[in-house]
Image (cartoon, rainbow, N blue to C red; front, side, top):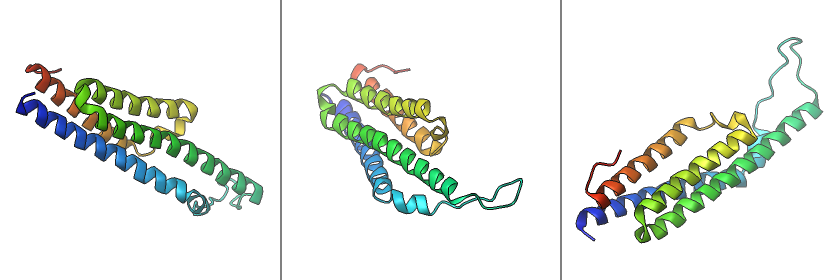
Length: 151
């Protein structure tokens, strides 16, 4: 294995570890604090009547928030664990494991979007940055392995 391939694999490994650890840390924090987050949600007044919603409606909204927060955090922690696992296995087949990590992350985001469409725009900048990073390391690893420009 030449130096260029080693360098690309090392860069890809660090990016995958960064993405995976970031997803695990952030969503682990969300899971640990989901009750505090739900209670801190502001309660808007009714736009027509100007009155506060009933307590049971507020409780239902907070319960729905908890449910979505737990669901999205668990799925994203799975994507983070997948990225860390792919980083560990990267030297075995660099292009394959980078693509697997990218497809796994993308699959989680699409799956969450199908289950609850409102989650698509949550953290869109971070999602785009992660996908751009995964795309970049895929291209870099393929170019290093083949010696030719990849897409």
